Image (tube, helix red, strand yellow):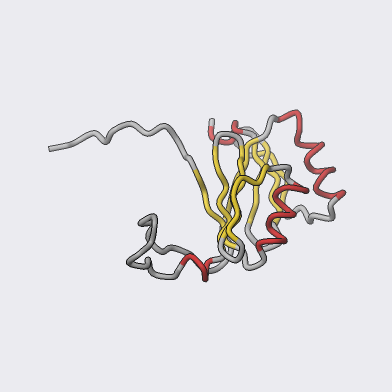
Length: 140
């Protein structure tokens, strides 16, 4: 018997991990232009990214097991090593994005057109996460 899952609306939030949350906050607000919407010093800083939220956690702080008296029953989580986060941008903005990143001395690791169409620019945030700005056309 096959059951069809209920429909989803899309991605609501994505998480990256960083040791230095102050450097992460400066990068995501000053360089990328996201709006900071929440912060718990030493644990996390959250940003609005279009209709989605980018969560940046200190992995060590989120791996702590849930306390019995916790106000919210959010399970522990966290990872090690760099992650990946991709933001979409209009095709007409890519040259401006490249120049903007270079002005902020952000090294561009890759900048190319996909075989199926659409451009991607890859670079790193201060925590070493792989960040991509892509034309939504890369997914058709």
